[in-house]
Image 1 (cartoon, one colour):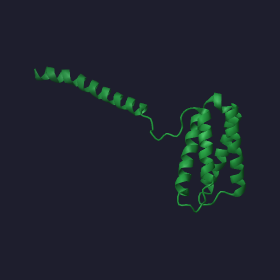
Image 2 (tube, one colour):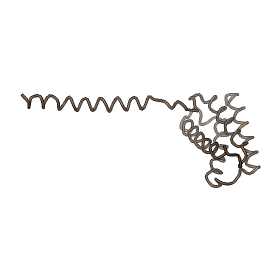
Image 3 (cartoon, one colour):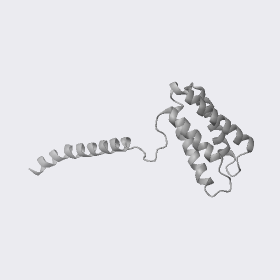
Image 4 (cartoon, one colour):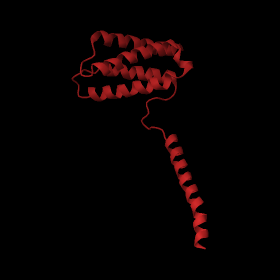
Length: 141
C-alpha cells in the first residue's frame, strides 16, 4: 500500500514542481516594470527621451543631482536603443538615425570622460540633434 502511494505521489510531485516553475516564469515575464519610461510608441518615446536628455545635459556638473541624472540617462539611452534599433520599421527613419547619433555621442562621453563636464561644443551639437530628432519624429520621418 505504501509503495503504491509512493508511486502515485512521485509523478504528482514532478507535475506540481513543473507547474510551479511554469507559473513563476509566466508571472515574471508578464510583470512589467512599474517605473518603465518607454511606452512602446516610437514617436512618444523619442520625444520623451530627447526631452529627458536635453534636461540632463543642462544640469551643471557640480549639482548634487548630476550623478544620479547621468546614471538615469545612461540607462534610458540603453533602453531606448535596445528597444528600437532591432525594429526595421524604425531603424531607417531619419529621426532614429539622428537620435542614435546624439545618444551614441553622449554615451561615448559618459564612458570615456565620466568625471569631466560636457564640452560646450558637444552640448550644443546634442541639443541641435535632439531637437532635430523631435521635429523629424513629429513629421513622421
